[in-house]
Structures are given as structure tokens and as C-alpha cells.
Image 1 (cartoon, rainbow, N blue to C red):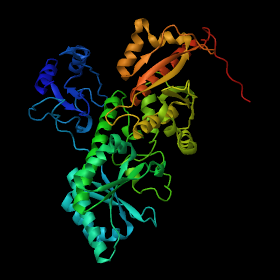
Image 2 (cartoon, rainbow, N blue to C red):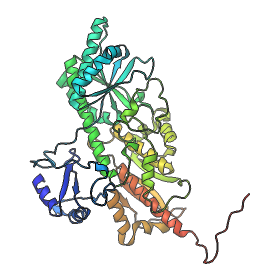
Image 3 (tube, one colour):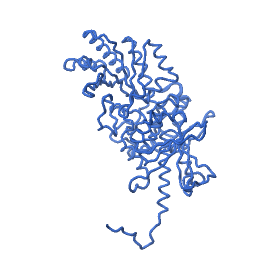
Image 4 (tube, one colour):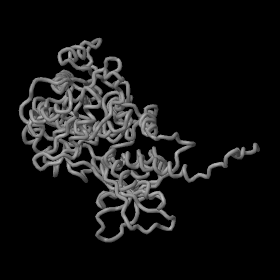
Amino acid sequence: MQWEVLDGMLAQYGAVESCEQVNTDTETAVVNVRYAAKEHARLAWEKLNRSTMENCTLKVSYIPDETASPDGSTPGGRRSFNSRGPPRSGSPGLSPRPKVQSDIPLRMLVPTQFVGAIIGKEGATIRNITKQTHSKIDIHRKENAGAAEKPITIHSTPEGCSKACKTIMEIMQKEAQDTKFTEEIPLKLLAHNNFVGRLIGKEGRNLKKIEQDTGVKIFISPLQELTVYNLERTITLKGAIDACAQAQEEVMKKVRESHDSDMAAMNLQSNLIPGLNLNALGLFSGGPGMGSSMSNVPPPPGAHGGCSSFGCSPYGGEGPFWASMLSMSSQPYAGPPESETVHLFIPALAVGAIIGKQGQHIKQLSHFAGASIKIAPAEGMDAKQRMVIIVGPPEAQFKAQCRIFGKLKEENFFGPKEEVKLEAHIKVPSFAAGRVIGKGGKTVNELQNLTCAEVVVPRDQTPDENDQVIVKISGHFFACQLAQRKIQEILAQVRRQQQPKPLPGTQPPVPRRK
């Protein structure tokens, strides 16, 4: 679709404030459109959703702006989306609009003996680098006392990061010559493990191409070195300074593309959950300042300093997300949340990655999620899927499933441009299945439209020994989570209605004091 056609089509329903593309990785373009008035946005949604154009069906979701004040202005003068720029040419699928520059920092490891030279006398050298490259540079020298290497975090544009990185390499080279340090000084970059699979590429093609184009040798630290405190992998580049600088640009380009793609997917889903704090998630790396549920836990020796500023918490902070998620319920929760059982189906080949060496990964995951996690036996020799049984309250379900989705992506069980989509089963009382479906399938259809997950209650099921039937949920992580929460909300309403009501004029019994 050409931009001119899209603009004209959207303008039929009201004044469009912004129209920005949020993905470029697939043949299907996704754009976020903001109208000046809510009624115009709702009208566009009603008219365009499921409409056809050139034999293709348009899919439109309506995202209410919970932060907007009644008069349409944003609170505190805060900017919302990017303003519309000059007319574009091409189409969303072919020539994407300019995207906001990714703010992901460049992280590198340097030998401890060169930190003094990089800082310079009274900080003069580091101030000069930041001034010339328009960057903010943090040298985490006080962390991990006695470590052979110290991490450096560079915040700037991609060009500024690359320029600062090359300058630091040149300073280290000069210092090595002055101190007669004869060992090779490779460039070591740090990248969140979530991005490394896509950096490597299928059968290592991406890395091979970078090596061929630059003449640099690239090595990536093994997965076994990851810990729950540090989810960064070390990418070592060996070669001449100019060649390493060129390779660094290509490596970080791939990392930023992965980061932007993941954030676009997150934003698209999180807009369906008002108040969702993206920084509370551990599935993807966040921007600077991401909080951590383990932020007060001192990392052990060997963990890279400054990690929290790069969003390296494996599970993220719990409070903000669940406060917003549970606030969606029409009724407050009474007492602690009940334990739930979810059956999550993963590729059979991924079982080893989830269990880990000597069961280490699944034990770690179970401990930090606060859930019981077991893998059911295979149903046959040729079974392509295995069932993971997760038992725990909503927060534990979220954390456990979050890391399982993330692990499958990290271990390349899904392609670099392929979204991780899994099937989850939850059991509901047979008498409540009709409430999940709704009259004429209305409730289940609304559920699918809201969550973007596929929700199916198979017909003609025979209830199990506990008089329960299965509800199948398929989709990516956010879709699955939101569908599970909404179904549990329906079940909670059914349970409340099942409770016997006191007769008129009678008082509920008052418990005796012991």
C-alpha cells in the first residue's frame, strides 16, 4: 500500500494527528495512527477492521489513550507521538518512514589497567571524548573490585557510540605501546542474550558476513557463562582498529534492529493494557534505568557492573506490571491470589534448553518465578511438542512463561524474524465454559479481538474427573497472558455468583474470637 493511499483512506474518518510505522521486519506493515478525536478513531476502527483491499484483509485494533485529558490535550504538555513530517514516497512495506533512533547504549569491556588512561588526568581525557562524540560515558570502575576487566557504557547516537568506541580503542593501543604491553587488545562488546541469536543468524550467516566484509574474527561467549545476575554475552572482535570499528558498527546495527523489533512488538501489545510498565518485563532488554526485582542484591564476582542500567534483570520488577494488570478486574481481589495451573506446549527439541545442564535452568526458573515447573512425559516417540506444567499464582505464571518464551527465542527455536507463538491450555469448570464462550460466541470473539490471541473451547469435550474442560489459547507472550487473565476474571465472576447469598433480613455469621 502506498503512503498516499493510506493517508487518504485514514482522512475519510477525521483529522489524523500522526501515522507512524512500528515495524519493518515482515511483509505486513504495522502502523500506529492517532486521530485528533476519540470518536474519529473509533469510527475508523469500526469501518476499517476486517475490510478488504486488493484481496487483503486489514486488521485494526482500537487503543484507548488512557493518558489523554478530556479536552484531548496531553497532561503536562507531554509529547505523544512524533508529529507528521513532509509528504513521503513509497509504501510502508517498501520504504519505511524514518524511525526514532534507538536509545540502546553501546557496552564494552576494557582491561582494568587501561581505565586510568581512558579517564585521563582529573578526567580530562574522558571529558574530551564525551565532548567530541556528543555522548555520555559511564566507566563502572568501582564495581567488581579486583576484576581483570571493567565495563563501559556509552549513551549516544549510533554514530556517536561508534566514534567514542574507536577513540577508546586508540587510547588503549597508545597506552599499550607506552607501557610495552605486548598482548593483543581485542574489542569486547556486551549484548543482551535476547539479541545474540539474531546477531548470529541462521547457521551463523550474519556473523560470517561481518567477518568476510571486515576481515575481523568474531567470538561469542558461551551460554553457560550466563547467570541470573547477568544476561549479557561477550562479543570479542579481533583485528586492526579500523576493521574492529567497522565490525562493531555492523554488530550493533543488528543488535539495535533486534531491540527495535522487540520493543515495537511490546508496545503494540502493551497499549492494550492501560498503565503497563514496559520496564517491569524481563522478556526483552529495556532502556537505561530499568528497575529490577533484584536490584538490591549484590552481584557475585564476575557479573558485569552497570548491568541494571541496561535492563539485564532476568525477570524484572514485579510490582508495577501486576498492579496495572490486576487493576483491570472489575472486582478487587480478596486475599492472596489463588494458584493456577497452565499447560504450556513447547517444541520437543527445546526440552533440553528449558531443563538446562543437570536441571539447573528449570530449578533456577522455578525458584525465581515462585512456581512449580515440570515437563510432562512425551506422549509418543514422534511427539513434536512437550507439555510444561506450571503451577503458581498469576505473578509466578507471568514470570515463568515470560522466561520460557524468551528462552525459546534466545536458543533460536524460532527464526530471527519469527514471533514466538505457543499454545497454552487452562482448565475451567464445565458449567463455566458457556460463560467463556458467551451467547453465540460473543464473549470468546471479544476476547480474541482484545488480546490478539486465538481462544478456542473445543466442542463435545468430555469433562475430566474434576468436571473440568480445556480452553486452548494460542499466540505470542502478551496475547497469551492477557487472554489468561481475562478468562480467570470470568471464572472469578462465576465463582462469586455461585456463593450462597444471605436471606433478606439476616446477617452473615460473625466468626468467634479464639
